[in-house]
Amino acid sequence: MKHNFLRRPRGAADLVADGVRVAGILSVLFAAVRLQPTDAGILAFALPALMVPRFLGLRAGVDIVTGIVILLAAWSNVVDLYALWPAWDIPMHVLGTAVLTVAGYVALARLDAVPDPRRADRGWRTAIGTILVATAIGLALSTLWEMVEWAGWRFISDAIHVDYEDTIGDLAAGGLGAAAAGVLLGRVPLVRSDAR
Image 1 (tube, rainbow, N blue to C red):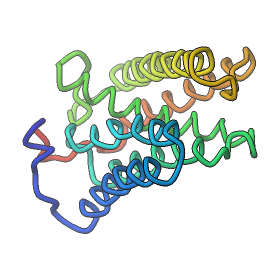
Image 2: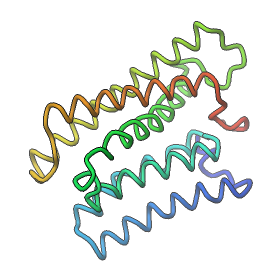
Image 3: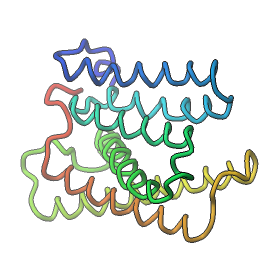
Image 4: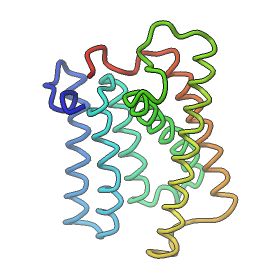
């Protein structure tokens, strides 16, 4: 994975993906200087998710989409878009969980815990298994996120919106995004052919 991270960009899409990562770092610095410390913390919390696609050797397009979705979700929190437009929360949970599920599945494939999505001999049983495993990964990630939201509400700020309906809705949206990620993992090449 170190090789994937240190690999030089091989085209415009790779440069854009790295540019999204730089935008994430600059976002944290901007928030630290111009906004509240909690805003800088929210944006810093997104940084690992911006780096993971490069480590895993995801294709540049997947890397770009992952970075944009993660940054958009973080900035939506910073500018209170979730409070201004509550319906925005659902697509962000669908998309956010989808991109993180892809990363989680590929990471597990690197550990030989699940079939490698680059395999050519993928039959229908493997495809169904991929969807089920991806959905489980996404639901687990969604559950962890809801625990983080609860901890933020409990220990940091009661301005964080946490209630039963919101939590269940977020988990359902995350499950939908994860299932969609499972379909993509079985049908679309999401990992670079030269990834190690």
